[in-house]
Image (cartoon, rainbow, N blue to C red):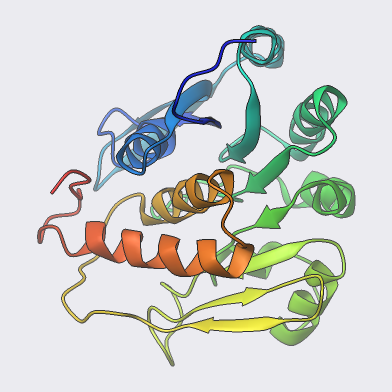
Length: 253
């Protein structure tokens, strides 16, 4: 098994040509925070920071082959997963990871719809596999729009309760109207942590959700507790959000 001074973190996500989101954003985040970022492409997207046109899914067999090869070579302890064609494939990917290492920590960033309205997941299949996926991952990181797809018919408090019975929940607050930028961490142990905005010079960025989830992966692989990792990931993401006034953030300042 190949090792380096930097820990390996794997991103399984889509390709964004503008490099603001997807595995390119993940790898930039991971490298900036001292990790070696590995990546598997789940989809070729036609997009930039303003417009999303199309998504072309990578065949699942190619994803599985790349995963097997990387796990044969590198010691991976934390994995972040972004867009993926459906939860059936996601479930199989998670099984392959856990079969290699039952202690591997999987962070699922459920990117369910683009800002332009392109839906990545069908609602029926999403609900069919949701419980099984949540029971296997270490952490799920939806925003306020994405969590609406979880458990239809439940109100927000009920959704949070149902999720935290199965896994840890980092709820991103970018889309909340009453307290913009307030993130919240709910743990399976019943603990709650409020993560208020730490600065007032942040501006909207394409791919901010990818950045916070991969930053969480980085801090977890360095041994920080989940609450510590959440606080540090929030701070790092805000640094990128404040790096300039465009929709594409800078990681190396």
